[in-house]
Length: 347
Image 1 (cartoon, helix red, strand yellow):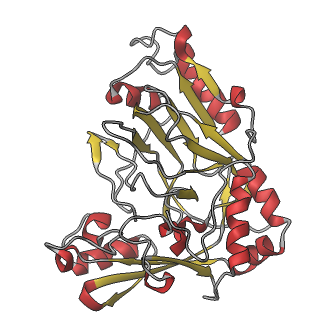
Image 2 (cartoon, rainbow, N blue to C red):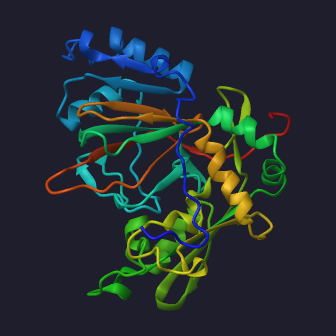
């Protein structure tokens, strides 16, 4: 990829894990992984829930599972309530019933982010399940958001985020306007993102998610969402960072068919809550704060990770596959919650 003039390359981690993986990894080779193990209250379920409560992250290895639906049963030992993914900016197709694909080009960097931070209804957790992988390619990275929050609040930029909040700008194209075309410049159509067919339905749906709505040429749906850059996490009784450059035009720096667009024509933009722009230096710090506290997850088939959406951000570098190589992760999204933003006195 040819570097863009203002391209900020994520590092993903500092070279050593920000948390000892043994604190959140469970080796399933000691379990039969039969119906008894996959029942609530089993030893495996108890270990999973204790680890998740303590760390906000569970990584199961050596499961010997190849069936994604069986992996889903394992994930549901923690994730009791799943959500239907119906409010996403990323198009997500189904790998299997109730299991979604990641929903982004493999070649693109997916900057660290918290799932569904750009709407008023977010999700408490998510799970990834490795259906296929290629050795040495396609690691997912998670970043310790508690450490990231402490770090950013000690900077002038963090205090500015705390004071001003953010505005998320999203432009969603109309599917019919691109019928028969090569979809150049398309990120997501509002029909697919919102699961509706008519503009009035899209507008009504957007407003249920706390979005301000306007329309541009060719039925371009333009939304704004004003929110805190932080979110109160009841379990730790404190505000945690809940935003990243993943909701800015930077998201598309390595995205095929979109990366060529000037920043002012890209489908996403992130500004401060008073609509002032972030500087390049501020965006670089926004990338660095997550990179500093990154931990790699190097998948094997059957691996399952459950990630608290408050306590950890997640992302991955772009992946280039050769020949018949495949890398597929199934995704489950957990119970939804209504965002409250930051709470006074909980810093």
